[in-house]
Length: 169
Image (cartoon, rainbow, N blue to C red):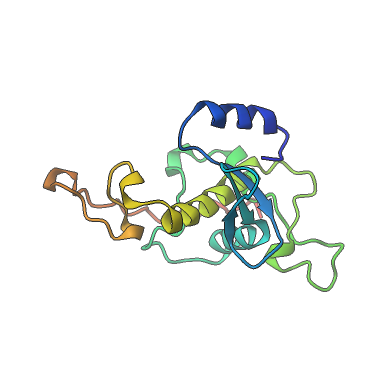
């Protein structure tokens, strides 16, 4: 919502049930909220989710709690890494440009960064607002839902340690 493909996205959402559009905003104190004017639009505090994603990229070293989902190592391309690492400190903001919420892309391609940021926001929304029966497989570690049958009780795979950002920042 609001991007360069706004009409295409809106058309797709209208044709499919249970889909939402997303728009970043930085007003108010709520992390996210439903739009009063558009029932399928969710408004998120963009700077907060940008900061969270940058924290996960550059600082978070815990790998045991599914903080951020990545592609498998063999599917991470140079373009993906370049776009994830596109945001940098704002050099025009001498006082607070180094704070994650003030990082800028300066016209570098950053679509993968944006979609990862949207994923974090939509996951928070889904966990807080959707009823448990809306979850497709009826299991999600974050919700504390146990699988319904023993054959569905698959243990999560542990992601191998990777230094995939080396050379890009």
